[in-house]
Amino acid sequence: MLLRYKADRRSLFFVFIYLIVASLSYIYFPSKWYFILPLIALNAVLSFFCAVIIHNTIHAPIFKKRIWNKVFQVVLSFSYGHSVSAFVSGHNFSHHKHTQTLKDRTRTTKLRFKWNLLNQLLFFFVVIPPIAKDENDFAKLMYKEKPRWFWQYVLELVLVIGIKVVLVILNPLAGVLILVIPHLYAVWGILGTNYWQHDGCDETHSYNHTRNFKNGFLNFVAFNNGYHSAHHDKPNLHWSLLPAYHDEFIAPHIHPNLNRGSLFVYLWEAHIYPGKRLNYLGEPYILPEINVDEEWLDDMKVSHHNLDLGVED
Image (cartoon, rainbow, N blue to C red; front, top):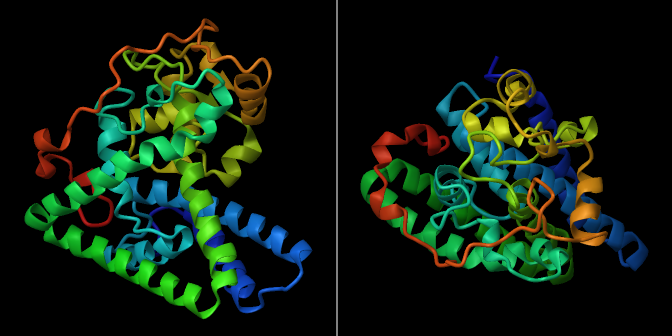
């Protein structure tokens, strides 16, 4: 009765599993490398799943009551090592409202390596500095215009960083390998999805701006985020409703090359063999000459975008 959609029982289950696995991995940290390596991998994958849940939550909070959503965002912050509210500025505002333009801090055209695999692997490292700057500037704006949002952000940030620092000090090896590295992987992974979801698409087209992946297992563990065109069309639509929305409103209009089956097949083709950077029509992707960020924060009217602020609308 607390949840807006029953489907989010799956979200809660994944978060619970991560917290249990991470806690036990830290408390009973093994001494043998052949136990340590699988634990790092397991925590990294589970933390990434939680990052997907974070993405869903800032678009559509899962509980009916605000207080439960506030608490849940604090808990979620521990699952990937940073404030959940911080995701709002770079994703909900910069990326969603200015997809693949100079105001989008995660536009794929920032990456210009000839070897396309490097573009995917290094995407995080290129886009994170301007995202961090925007996060800081956005927080200052919220302090003035939406104090309740600002203090939720501060609460999440102070608690997650403070407790993680303490845990690293108490057991440096376990803290770094079980917490820090998996959290970095989760952030690297969730930002990296932008590259394979948007690179080579047409941001000016009503439907061909985003690539979709309809594999059943992928969408089970990634909470239907393979249906990314539907998500961009209706960002606040609950993730459980994306497949039906895609079939009715997106599939009849989108170019068939942007409806893929296997993500892994696409990644192999795009980054390994033949590994060429192509647009969605299969032609060489011609990058725009201008590659300098434009400001978006100065033009934003926060009061017009309450649905994009996460729990503290």
